[in-house]
Length: 339
Image (tube, rainbow, N blue to C red):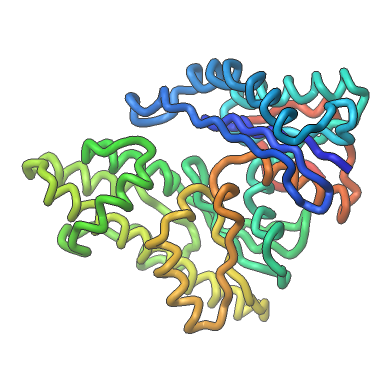
């Protein structure tokens, strides 16, 4: 069975053609550099860029995979959450192909794509804990099985990736902020800049990052920006993010232990999770607790169509998932809204 998948929830246009066993025949991702000068994603520009990229990606994928589109069995696309204009571009394009070739269309939740992405290249022990860390979401899930996800905690303000972008902008670093801060932090001194740890004294599993961003802003305003300051702020900020993750991880394990839920794996998914410093720090803690860290393949950390196709395959195989070409795109689509 051949699956065509498309992801366009934010500022990456991605198309993938894969077999039902997860083997990828072609996988293309077009990032939108137009947002760099704004320090963040501009929704209208994102939609226009998707329109400009989508036909070329489609043709490139067909050429690389040597697949006749008539032979594709299933079409699927991200239906939410995300930017409504971006979602519409990708979903309508895929629905049109589905209608044209008289094949079923499946609407996929973007977050579910991330949650299931580590199952493509790891032996899974359910239930597993998942930290979903992206530019738009920061959430902790308990994944009991395909189609059964329990939200344990999430950000109450900025997402972690958004915080990285905003701090990078304050430091005059490039967009996206994650890679820029990670690179700069290597030359800085950890804790040389004192930053707050929001919600530390509360037993909540929710996150908050706006206070850290504000602290960086105030520090930058009071001090002259130079390379040394940029490096030290980057190192201190990145380490504080790691401290927060470790703290939430410990709180989550305590909660699950009280409920007699045994966790053997921690999945790190989403674009922020590719940060090597964060992975290394969490791995040290997980090794002590004898918990395995699992991640998707490198190309499936950020927004991508392969995770959408794989989620579709898993739902078709393991649940009573129905095709629905009339499913409406929803920028606030909930994880359990489509069964």
